[in-house]
Image (cartoon, one colour):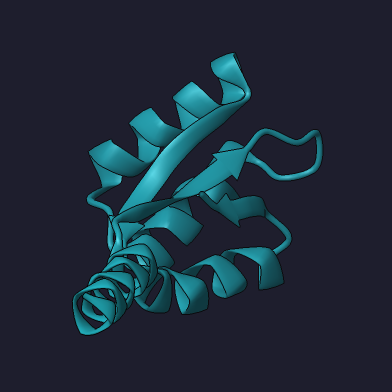
Length: 91
């Protein structure tokens, strides 16, 4: 029974580490629409229309999920957005 429990715990840890997450971009009063759009195209690999839509959602609702993936995939992209002065977090 102990081996089965340990295997289950290891499986749950892997699931938590590899589960799907998203970068959430937040509205601010500093960055322009053009800068946000350019950043989403460059960093999150959005098409221009998708980046424009995300920028508008961020502006009107205060936040928008802009990229999905594992933490390891998203961390460098989120860091790059932060380096450009944008407000973003991985959720």
